[in-house]
Image (cartoon, rainbow, N blue to C red; front, side, top):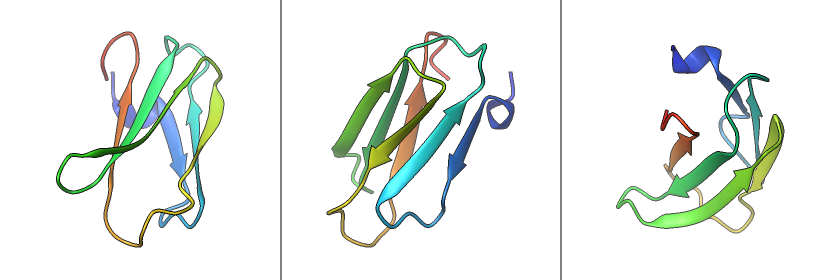
Length: 74
């Protein structure tokens, strides 16, 4: 499947909260991880909901990577 059809992520850039909306038939739970440019895990949340968010308050301005996983590892 094409990832862009499975999730919506906003806003970009993020100021405090990153919102994630997973497609209803996407296998749950969804694991969301935010890592810095060195690959160090900074924030993580696991959700069984279609809509959830990550509170990124306190992260310094910069570039981060968002990794999303579900039962199919995509």
